[in-house]
Amino acid sequence: MSRRVRLMHLGVMPYETAWQLQEDLFVQKTTLKLQQKATVLPDGFGHHLLICAHPPVYTLGKNGKEEHLLAKPEELLSKGVQYFKNNRGGDITFHGPGQIVVYPIFDIEDWKRDIHWYMRSLEEVVIRTLADFGIKGERIEKVTGVWIAPESPQARKICAFGVRTSRWVSMHGLALNVNTDLSYFKWIVPCGIADKGVTSMQEELGYSLDINKVEEALKFYFEQVFEMQLC
Image (cartoon, rainbow, N blue to C red; front, side, top):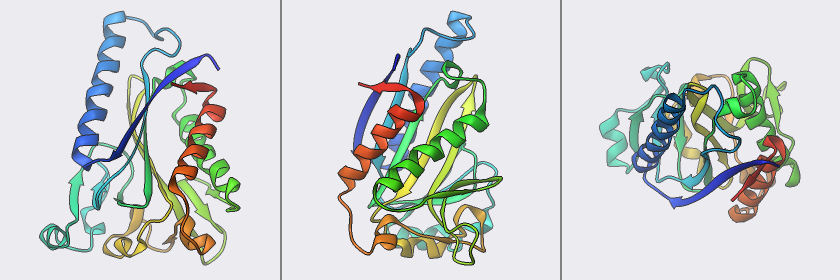
């Protein structure tokens, strides 16, 4: 595993603070690539993996539809929930306690020039993690995410994804529902998909999980799938 990736444990952090940190790292990386005037920087140069959780917040991707937020922003504020429009792909999603949020700031070009490969690799990390806990996570063709029983009428998403890339540098990432309060999802059309549900590891297994153990599994499979070393 020659690629070295800096691991940053952020704990519970306000969404806007984590977003600004991502932007700072993202700009540093893209600017450095321009200054170096190189297609690929030295192996493992400046990759970051940010792991955190957020207080309750809804975020809408740049191509998302505002009507997928089913409550007025002022109503949400009265409930202690924030709302942000951001610059990632995807539609609307929820972040909150009991969820693991992962933001890779990767120079994807250090692996390969293929966004499709990158997204499928992120999904693979989550699928392998879920398997460790006895949950079968699967894909739906042409629909980003990790799902439970995707071919059934009870299809439900357990992990949402949304990224931004520029010059092959990535930001934003994934949100895995571990012990998440799923009632927050009733205020949105999750990821803009109205005919499928949302679930969590707790919901699937019937008990609360040690979120630290889930996080350890995620880190292990990031190292395995992306052939890298967290440090």
